[in-house]
Image (cartoon, rainbow, N blue to C red; front, side, top):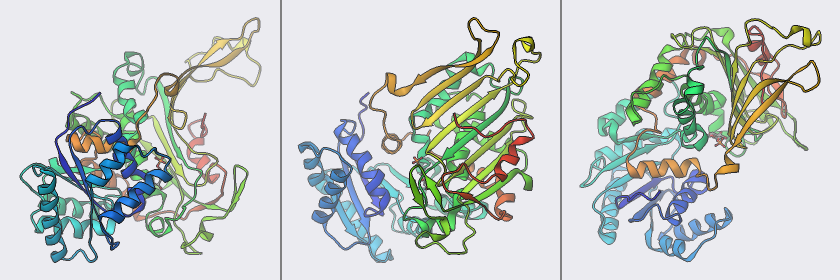
Length: 485
Ligand code: BG6
């Protein structure tokens, strides 16, 4: 569907960085070549590298070539005409005044009406000074609309998130702010809402009477790569659990919103976070990968990675049990886990339904077997889709067997957009539904306060495994084990 967008200027701070090249530029390129940005989208890259427009355009072209995109004529032409660059070395008030002047010059050149997006693709430590400086030179408002996009992590605990929110709100209205969690841009994550609220079949079973437990796994086979500097200060908890995995959990647990607009949906997600019972020390396990084998390749342990402290106690794995203490979910455990250097890359939600209250079929089953509970397995990535597991009688035998109903996105749909493409387009359109609201980010830091204040020592686990064995103990009491299916 083509929606007409208003001409605008996209100012990207950190425009020579990793995120720009891996995600933002390819996403903008797809939007342009896909014909979504039918009106002008002009980009002004800002970073410390001292270079001119031509060098920036050259770099952008190389990025797109490396990423395997066809640099068609139209896109090349678009880059030549619509990409600008401004070096900012110190982020001093003078430099921000120069930025304001450059913005006006670019807008004049392209006859733009003053619609502006400021995207902070920066290390979190640079958020406060940049937001403060934008406000001080008056770039928080313009003749058109002004939007501020902030990457995760938003703060590193409740106090710092509050402080950052206060600073943001000092200069910008919440309606101007887009806190990014790229998981919310994934089609399969958005589909959780459609799956639940467009299908009466599932929603009527979606409660403590019918569901025994929910598991959410976000596993990566990659290690820390070249991001140790950041990761050593974040760890798996701040990098993944507080944001991506918690977002998945709230979408599974939320009540039906009164409407399908940004605040209706975000309101219900906040309510889930507020309903979660206080987390106790026995409810979480941290891990850190040791050397091992991922697929056929031998890999080094976390402490041996470049720029990692050889005695680091940063966690690369977290498993957690949560209880949503509300009318719908009381007594249903939510098990969530994430880790780097696990056996394979998979993000999956497994909804375990309860077993039948009475086993009529005991005589058909061998001594050791029992009826398996129905399961709904939602595959977020890769191999996006879902499977419904149910029991059937094997023909000619007195045996019960588990079978699956299977849906795969790729069987039906092509051109599934990348998460960043969706989110950037929503920013351009001014739709905040898939962005995290100020109170939501604070509610999630508040929920995890006990864990952040007393982080446990990480248990070592072999790279290529499913994490430390201690994580199994979290789950055994509920007569289950971790699974990826
Ligand atoms: C990022 C984290 O937000 O998400 C990374 O900082 C992680 O550490 C990445 O690898 C995972 O995203 P995806 O989309 O590849 O699952």
